[in-house]
Image 1 (cartoon, helix red, strand yellow):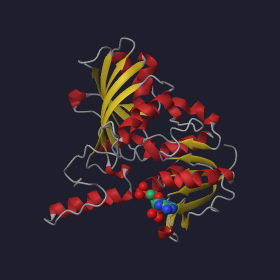
Image 2 (spheres, protein in one colour; image 1 turned 45 degrees about the vertical axis):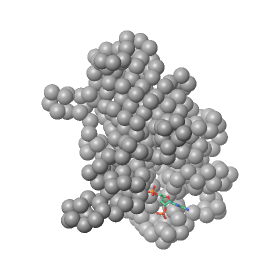
Image 3 (cartoon, protein in one colour; image 1 turned 90 degrees about the vertical axis):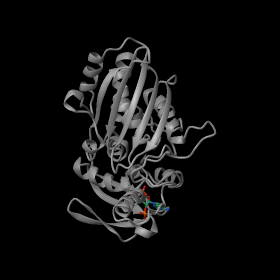
Image 4 (cartoon, protein in one colour; image 1 turned 60 degrees about the vertical axis):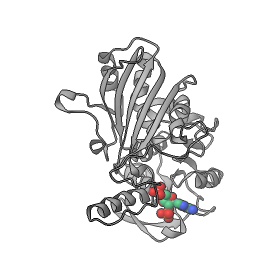
Length: 332
Ligand code: A2P
């Protein structure tokens, strides 16, 4: 980008919005002016940016005058309503919600995989589902080497993926349990502290959840691979930050662990952490607040033909959301 830009963050006070601010700062994104937008509840709050404090404003239909780039992370209904309004006002929108991800006129982008699709945008570019983005960081290099046919996966998803209130719910439940007080549930239908919930997003008639189908639906679009099949179980775990995914993938061509390690070690945005003998493998605590995703536990799958099993983890607030959005904005 050759000039400094007026950037807006819609949902600036949320778990992802706050990360967007930090990523813009850290990556020295060329910001001439920053407009922070959230609900009326947050109007007047001040958030730090480049040593100054920027006041949060209430999101309104006239909020987008003069804005060049608008990063949206305030939920699907806000994106659906205000995204086109922002485009109409002349902004390019990078949307973190699922509102436009399956819209054929909206590129769905992980820059390391299909950054070239950004050029096809008509004003809105969609940021993928966080679990899908993290999985593709490892699956894409393997797909290029061996041609993926189908995959089975189980995710271990951090509460920050649900948002700021869920982080607070886990913290309060842990404190309550440690001091013998009753647990209060508000965000999740069950206690999340010291538990795992095989339930992320709403259930479909098929028995899968919406979140589980995103891997296949969004993976097909991002990798330009309409034949990809993915059967996924998404699980919420009492981890604050960083998602992990256990993947078993079957490929067209014969695979080898050596070649898999070689292509994964060379992949941008991905670190190979695969030395089980020394207890080295990716873990959410090690991925939290890190830009790079990590992959390890790479082995030949004993139940699939031409199959590989691996474990990939990444900070879903970063690669799964804020970092990916800013990387897209950098390429516009
Ligand atoms: P607010 O903090 O004022 O509620 P999270 O995903 O962490 O829950 O964050 C959601 C983000 O979306 C927050 O910044 C939140 O602002 C914002 N948001 C939620 N509802 C609205 C709304 N009706 N108008 C504008 N921003 C909203």
